[in-house]
Length: 77
Image (cartoon, rainbow, N blue to C red; front, top):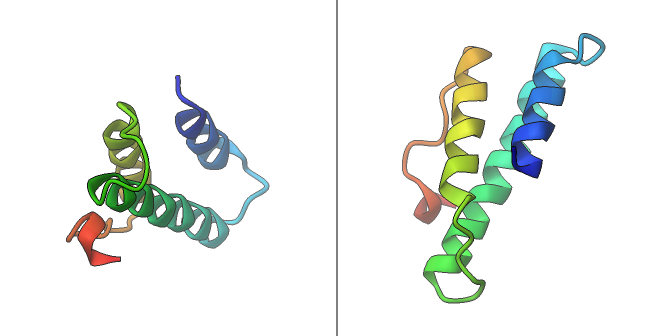
């Protein structure tokens, strides 16, 4: 399990974190992951094989909380 996946599981299962804060935390992870993907496509950082999987995991976590992920992908940021 990647670091991001462990972090997501921790966020989702922590009963002390209000749902709104969970969504905020997941949105930040989503923005970071999209930014990292965008940087990789522009040749600024090496491509990490787990980046796409991490983003999918973040998107699924957002859906579990009734939220829609960013639709346009890395280029939208």
